[in-house]
Image (tube, rainbow, N blue to C red):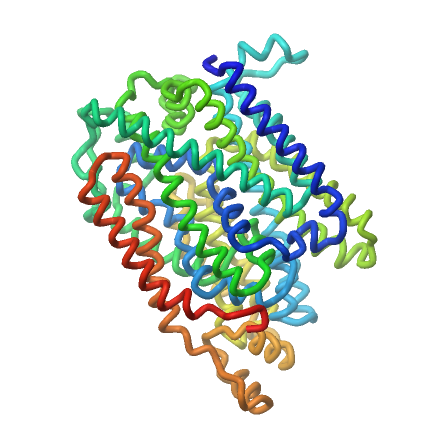
Length: 611
């Protein structure tokens, strides 16, 4: 075991800091539901942005991205569009503003602002809660698996087993470690709510920024003294109809990894990602920690700035680290311990490279940062899921007049229950990529149709939303068994079709939403789309009202924003690879896009809370 006393001390100091944060902010969080779940809407946008970025700098996702870079090179910059990572641009340009104008606590509560309070709205409210809880469990299980696999590298079981009074089968050692570190995340999240999550995330971001610079510099020094052996096409983000990366003469096992991932027909894969990604992005954020950070912003303007800051503070730092680990893995592949169960597990590249190449002291900082990354994602997801259980089930249906003490107790019960269930689910998942693919292509895909139409079509009602969500959720939960071995992305069109059918049938089975609800929503949120009948009625009552005419400008800004974000991903990779010409080109593109967005987006943001 390479951990020194200094490294262990740094890690323990971080864990102690999270405990202190939870204890210090406990009283403030207990003031009210809003203080606990949204930080009282008093946190500035830059803190929320750093916190949101930290939540996305998760350990499981970083392991996955290092593996992608190792295998696919610069072409790996596109694969996170599966998520889709560019949904942050849609939020930045217009959707965060629309969402924050609602002044609600959760996405389920938002339903009432759009569909009213009748039967259709009640059904919609219920299905959003179900979806939020399922997604929360998926994310919690995803993080739980990643942290266990990660820690196992640095704390070999033979060093620990002598101090454990019970037997743990070897295949469940990662789960044991996962449970230990989950407890710390649960502690500060349950006690301090959103406020403690944001402050813990700030510590994590500082640790990760320092770690990223260290890893990148170590990799740059290594590549300056060694030849990087990669297949033709690895060093460019451009691609043809097929992937055509041949590892046969370098690391033959990588070809098997590419075949198992299902990305070989890259043009088809890319077009499917864009098709699904644009629809998912237009539908708005899923009911997770990202949405809760938007709702926690002080104003619509600050919500947009928060979403915009995420890409800027996350991408360069994160990909400097990812490129560093990917390069070290390639240069010293023979020195890495990647064997798990008798075969190579490429998800072990990150932890194995850390164990092999990071010096004492820096190792403690890096491990503390990566543990913090896990806890950040875990705590944020837990907070978001608690919000739905407490706000939309307990307070809405069980005890509407509950005092703050009862609300706090219910937050604890809901959080502990969710953690317990997610740990059980984590025992049944194969690996990080398995859970990730199900979340991004299955669950994310299932909510697209209903959540897309709710923003842009006035006639869409609560019944349509409910049956559209059902039409998406049932395939999301069953297609993995029906289409065994098929990449989830490729079953998305069928899932979308079933969801759209559910939306249309459900909408026309019931009357439109009450006119007053639609008018209030339209005047407050000001969406563009198919709202003409409602717009005409609003103007008849208020002739000075002006509709949102920003569709073309918003779409232009989205295109520029996606190019900007992609350049922020690519240029730090080229820095680590010491490829200065393509790095300068990517950086130049990012700068040009920044100047354009300053004029077409930032300068035109709403001026204050009332706008």
